[in-house]
Every structure is written in structure tokens, then in C-alpha cells.
Amino acid sequence: MRVAVFGAGGTGGYFGGLLAKAGEDVSFIARGEHLRAILAEGLTVRSKMVGDFTVRANATDNPAEIGPVDLVLFCVKTYDNDAAERLRPLVGPETMVLSVQNGIDHAERLARVLGEGHVVGCTVGVSAIVAAPGVIEHRAIRGLIRFGELPRGTSQRTAQLKELFERAEIVADERPDIQVAIWEKFVMICAVSGVTALTRLPLGPILACAETAELFRGTMEEVEAVGHASGVALAAGTAQRTFDGMSRSDPRTRGSMAHDLETGRRLEVETLNGTVVRLGSERGIPTPCNFAIYAALKPYADGPPELP
Image 1: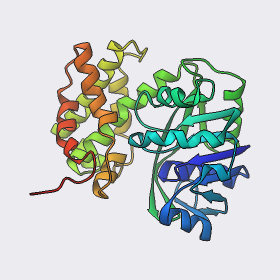
Image 2: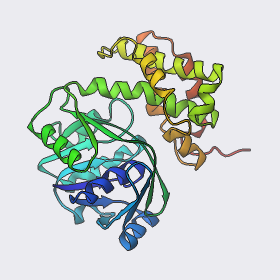
Image 3: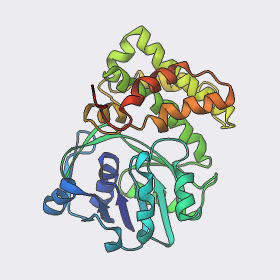
């Protein structure tokens, strides 16, 4: 299968690297030093879970050089969604596009640009970063992709996706109601990314302190309540089960916003905790934990603020 990975950062580089390693025809759309390193030395993935490997793959900063493909993995940050217009040269009549992003409405926004027939709903679980140009460091979570048709359902093409990912030894879950899966991740990531960024700490010390553990749990409970008020069929107790699962996770885990804050990048705080606050206000659901995270991180939304 011809695959284009638009955004070869931690997530795109990890999943695209595994697909290329499995023999799929993968092209990466990257930029700057990262692109130059991939062209010169290939893309290297360092991982204690799947092993270290390097793949040679086509890479460019111009999607028109690739042309239409079978599958696009759209792996940019949600504040870069204007980049969706650049996907058009990659999209043919039968092209599937997976929006591999955080948040709850990224697939719908992408469908408004490319057409609903192309976009497949998706959510992923992985912790990976660009450690150096051309090098992806896989830190935690082996890598899980959940996907399904929008607004719900499965199909022949989602079955093909499952086969593709399983050939690459990527855990793949075909979901008949992908919106529930997206919200399940939203419950988790608003807490993991928000609280690790807010405290500048990994998961272990956060959960070892009663007060920050309560903030972590409360953040999840608010997201679940907003989801229910929004008509999402989240199972009762999703937040508590997710919290219990996180207590068994790698204590070194940090969310993507914590990494972006540390490296001086823009934050997805509007997409995550800011969205919870806005939806909670619209639906009459109090969100004090998410508001605290949002208020504290908003000055960093466009990168570190200039100090007087």
C-alpha cells in the first residue's frame, strides 16, 4: 500500500517507520533539519519495546512530488490544521485519510476540507518524540491505532486498514463507534498532557502526591461529564477506570504538552483543556480542574511569553 505520512514528528515517524520497516511504500512529508537528516541517513526509531531500526524511505517537503496515495496519516499538531490544504495532491478518488491528532473534532474539520468520503475517524496511543533530526525516540506505550468510519460504523476499507497495521505489528482496533474511542482518549489526554505540563513532572510523582492525584482524577471526571452532556455514549465510570489504568503506567510518562512546554514549542491547550472549559460552559458542567490547567498554560499557547 502506498502511504504518505504528513508530519514526521514523534507519532508520524514512529508509525510511518514501522510501516516502512514492514515493507510498505511509505513517503514522509517533513521539513528543515529533520527532512535533510531523513534524506541523508534514513529515519531511525529507537525503542526498547519494538527494537531500534533505521528505514530508508522517500521524504520531501512537497506533497505534489508524491502524488495520490492509498493512505495518508495526517500527523500535525491541531494548531497547524491549515496544513490540510496541502494534502490535496496526495488525495485521489479512493484515498483514505487518518487524522492522527489530539482533540475531539479534528476528523470533522479535515473532512470539511477534503470531503467526508476520504476521512476515517482515528485515535492513537503512543509516546514518541523527535530526539534529534532523523531520530524518533519511542518512550512509552507500544503503539495503538483505533479507527472507524464517521460518524460510526466499519467497512471493507477499515478492515483493510486493520490488516495493514497488523502486518506492521501495530496494535489495531476497528471500532464501530469511533467517537466513543476519541472521547475515551480525550478523557485520558486532558489529564496526562495537562497535569504533566502544569506541574512540570512525570506521572509517577503526580500520582504519588494526594493533591495532584486528585487534580488528575478530577480533570478526567470533568471530561467524562462534558462528554455525557454532549451526547457521547461513554461508559459510566470511564474516568475512574482510566485513572486506575494510569496508576499502572510507566511513572516516567509525560504528555505531549509537557514536552512542548519544555522545548519552547506551541501548546495544544486550546484543543485539550480549553475545549473542555468551553463545552462545559455551554452545557452547564463545572470544569474547575480543567480551567486551572487552561488558565495556567494559556500564556504559553503560542510559545514562551515575552517577559517585561
